[in-house]
Length: 299
Image (cartoon, rainbow, N blue to C red; front, top):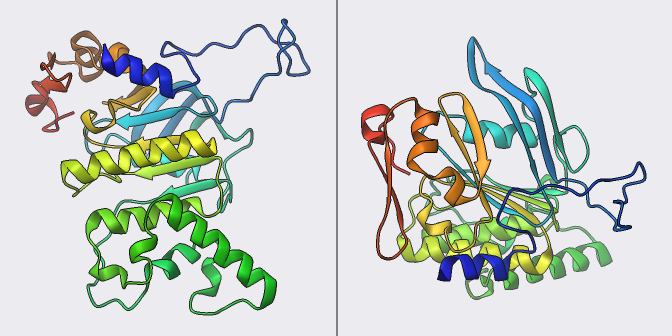
């Protein structure tokens, strides 16, 4: 299958569940190979907002270099999971670690692209200035002196080139298309050279061509720069060619695995507590039937 071939060539990890070899206390496995710590680890984690438990008993790990799509209906807690990793929320039960530590606000090793916001067409801010905020958001409109400023300018130029946005970097962001704006927000998240990139609905309101362009761009940069990706999306189809695993959240439950393990009739029916059916067309696209009756949200 072409999709499986592309995934195996792109990812340094097997498509099956990741399990570490037996390991000694010094972080070296019994065959003498150095082990890399998980980028993200949830252990029996739960989140409660007010009197409502969003989800609970979440236990999973995400390894360095993985590309994981986060799926599920509106209100299931996908963005909430990102807020935990950003240190904006704390689990009500269990534990969460990111890059080996308890999540904290302002972690420079985490790049974050929030859900898209409407931008005034008359906003007189250049794309280049927007990206600069990823290095020093406290100095909006102010130039730092000397060598430091030149170094920051070079970093911004590199980030713009990486996302192929140099051509329109000096235009006001309000005059750019949705796909162009999204590339600039991606550059802003990457300019700090993160180890983990969190993307919250980066494909929303984009046409299919722009969705595929953004997804393949992120996958290529992750492969070249070695960072891990967690991408929240409503539709699994645009990420099918590049994703390693999917993390599915529904009705207070969290499940993670390959697409073939999670996006199945049996698994989703279990998660939703109602009959749903997963079908694939001749192009390999995934469709879930019956969700409109239980959640009103397509995969």
